[in-house]
Length: 178
Image (cartoon, rainbow, N blue to C red; front, side, top):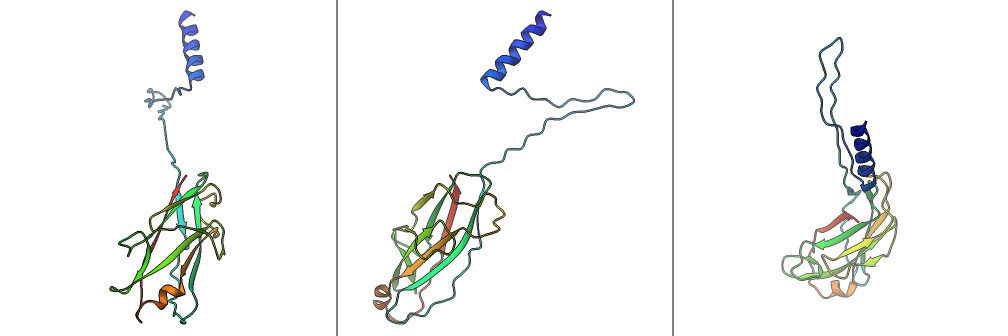
């Protein structure tokens, strides 16, 4: 009886301090039937995904109008409170977003909107910077619908200052759960 009371107190104390007493693997005993048991554990971390990213059609500068690209994407998580997004120009030697033809450079601007179909958003300012969004991602990683937009603007003044050529960059969008 005394051992039973001690075990009861130990169980109550464990419950009060948040300790989980788990079942360990056990073999069955010989008989008409025999039951073995095992403890299973799966840890699911916060997971995030960016989907529906597409390459915009190549643009031809008309000589006077900014060149704008937008792409509505899906940011999905398995329940994170939000996400971070980092935009990085793979051409950049500085902190700017840059298109290049291998010789000359054209700076451009990148913004992020926490909604689909947006034409403006929060500017990154420089390549490699991270923005936090406390809400908005789709609540699963299946991404059935778009919910965010990357907005890219190549200012006409920057395009007017470079010689005729084709200017390229690869923009990386890195998402992480908050």
